Image (tube, rainbow, N blue to C red):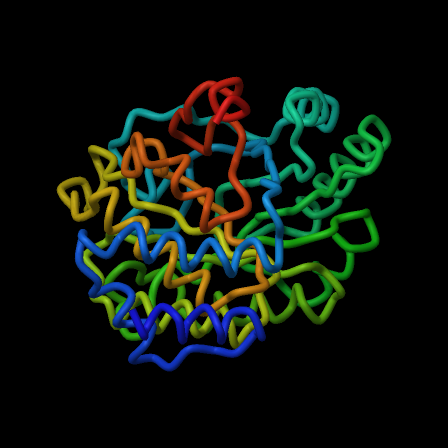
Length: 314
């Protein structure tokens, strides 16, 4: 296919595809799917070889969130049956992180539910970061604490954080239909604050919320414009008790096309298959690693992943 040859050539020299080319990837047929995967794989291997980066998630605080994000089991008013607890102590979080590092994880992601941290929360997470780094030499730590206020990103950096995650999730045009308690601009502002403080910016999306192909392309181009170093691609798990509980819109083939489009738009950026990969990619998970170069090891925030050994075997 001329399209795929063009996309590979552009990817190998870090050149952005046109919007029309990105949309065309999402519109390819199932008969063309393996060609799409192979083309994206050439770009992935150019910049990342055959290595897969393993990340491990530690949920520092679960549930009880005042925000109304429609996709989230921890949202305000959620009826989803999930664990709810307040902050883990630094030594508890460090022990949890050590389990992931022992399994081969190079990055530990510290996540806390809520709109954003107080200054006291930032101090608490800072102590947790220090504890993890003392016990696990060379590990990267990424914090994901919600919307940041002025100066908080700098304090996290001083405490030893390497990266900050805050996903855009969906396009600016559809954002208000997903969340009303904060804005798309709020999310962009937090990613920019993290970057300005010298933290690696980790920001991604959630596919499967009823968005159009144009929405998907829009959010991936926005992530590229924000210079995200890592782009997690989440696939919606429709939790019972949330407004998106009936949104089963994804097939394994659709997920592969989305990952390929992200790879072509972000050729030299870490593309991570994140939440929902087991549910939606199913037996095609190994195929997806021809496109993406990073996964989470084991479980997610409020949903189980596959066994960590199964991830390593894959």
